[in-house]
Image (cartoon, rainbow, N blue to C red; front, side):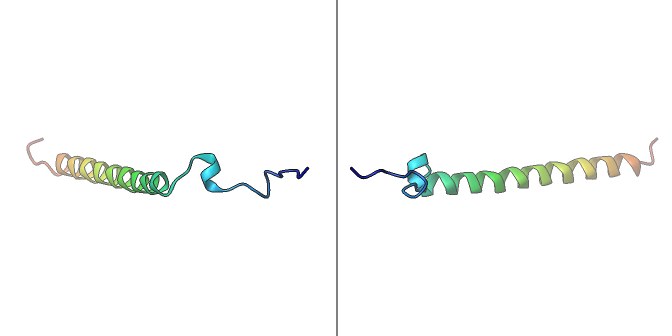
Length: 56
């Protein structure tokens, strides 16, 4: 009887990870980081415009 060692015979598909799911996670991380950067830029511009407003 052959003993199946899971440390030797384990691959990424055994955990349910496919190329599509890996690509979706990477794209999701990139989109989320872009959204945070865009929100930070908008907030910084808004604060700068309020600070430079001569009406106050």
